[in-house]
Structure formats: structure tokens, C-alpha cells
Image 1 (cartoon, one colour):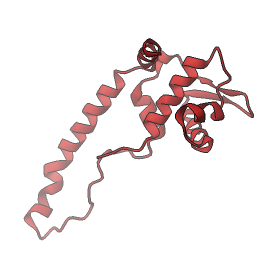
Image 2 (cartoon, one colour; image 1 turned 90 degrees about the horizontal axis):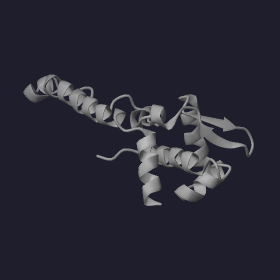
Image 3 (tube, rainbow, N blue to C red; image 1 turned 60 degrees about the vertical axis):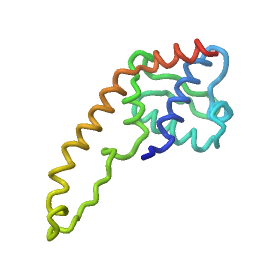
Length: 140
């Protein structure tokens, strides 16, 4: 299983904003250079982060800044801001009701998959952007 790269790109963006805020104007072009991707991708993700109230964006070449303290932003907040799907697991909707397995597969699996997603979200909610910033600065 593989998720999109939006979570890691969004986290990279936020780490750059916090790390370089005093030294550089953190624009989509600046961020694209660090992430090594197209500035359009950065602008799209910044838009999602802005809509979620995580970043503030100044029009033109004004740059981006955090809208909240890094202690108030968790990986779960970032994940929910940039991932479109509500559920991690995409279950086929119409199994064959004539088949004994098809008839029961949802009742056997649904609750377990929900529990797995809850466990992942609980772990993500424990990790703050501030923790990641500290770890990043220790390694620079």
C-alpha cells in the first residue's frame, strides 16, 4: 500500500517555512527548490494548507508563514488538510451476495479496517510540527 506524496510534501513545506522564516522569503519557488518539484505542485498544496488554517499566504511574492504555532500543528492535521479521501481503505462496494464470502466480507473486515485507521490517526496526532522542526534542526 502506498499513499500519495502530498503528506510528505506538505510536511516538507511546513518544515521549510518554520526553518527559514527569519532568513528567506519562503515562496513557492523557494520551496520547489528544496523539494525538487514544480512550483505549481507547491502552490496547490499551500492552497490546501491555507484552507485548513495551517498556513497564511501573501499574494504575489510575499511568501508563506505558519498560521499557528508549530506546537499546535500535528501530522494528523497536515494529513487531513492534504489528503482527499476520508478512508484509508477502499473496499469494493458490491461483493457477490450469492457467495458466502461475498455476503460476509464487509461484516468481517469493516470494523478491523476502521480500527487500523484509528490507530494510525492516533499516532499521527501525537507528532507535532515542533517535534519535527527540532529533529530537523539537530540534523542540519
